[in-house]
Image 1 (cartoon, rainbow, N blue to C red):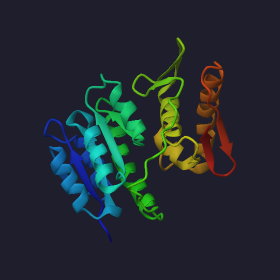
Image 2: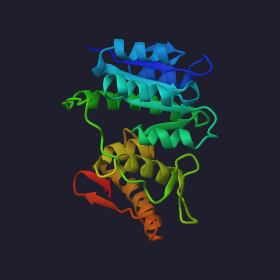
Image 3: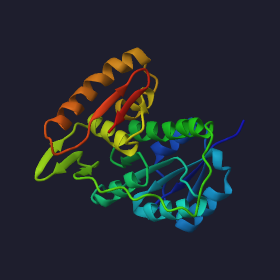
Image 4: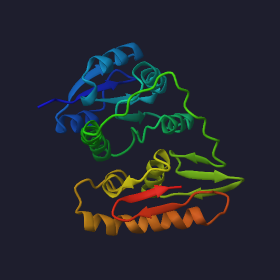
Amino acid sequence: MVITTAVYLTAGGVPDPAVLKGLAEAGCSVIHTQSIAQTISAVTSAPQERVVLVADVQADAIACLILLREYIGRLPPTLLIDQKGDNISYPIKAMQLGVTEYMLASDPDIQRELNARLLVERSHLISGRAQPPVIREQTAPVEPPLPFEWDPVSRMISCNGRYIRLSPAEGRLFSLLMANRGRTVGVRDLMRYALRKPDVNLKLGLRQLRPHMMRLRRKLNSTGNVPLRIVSTRGMGYVLL
């Protein structure tokens, strides 16, 4: 059995006990780092199919992610922890890098613990899929900027002076769909991430998920300024277009 290695970059020198508990429950071995250099060394030294990264954004985690992507061509499954929640650029940059697991240190212990455990569980699913080859010399196409702003911390969409406030569950749904825009997000992933219920029965989970999705759709449709729509893909999940 291959053991997952969790590389944990902290800003204050002391890892979050709830996060450590979640990683331990997922069967992780933890490497504690306190600098970008230590983190990159630990990530690149571990077996790539069984490594996850947990990092405080106040420990220059965004810069670390950028360097990692340049160095190995992709990012490991990553959970970012915001100790302060006072800088909107952190969650925006995280979303631009494709990191969907972003939480505040002030979140309840059970949420931080669950997020850490789910990070490892998702890494097992990802590693079981064939990874596309990394083409390092091609320049990724530049996507046009979106005509609105999304703040995952305050859960606010702003567009041309109009504001849409989302509930916590709607905000998590929107963040996950935004990070995978144009790709179908599976129902189970939405249940795990948005409802914080990884073990709920699929049928019951769908009944609980649909009202949140309906309210999110209604809010997005309340103004024509947000050119987004959520489409259900039968038997699979939802996609944001």
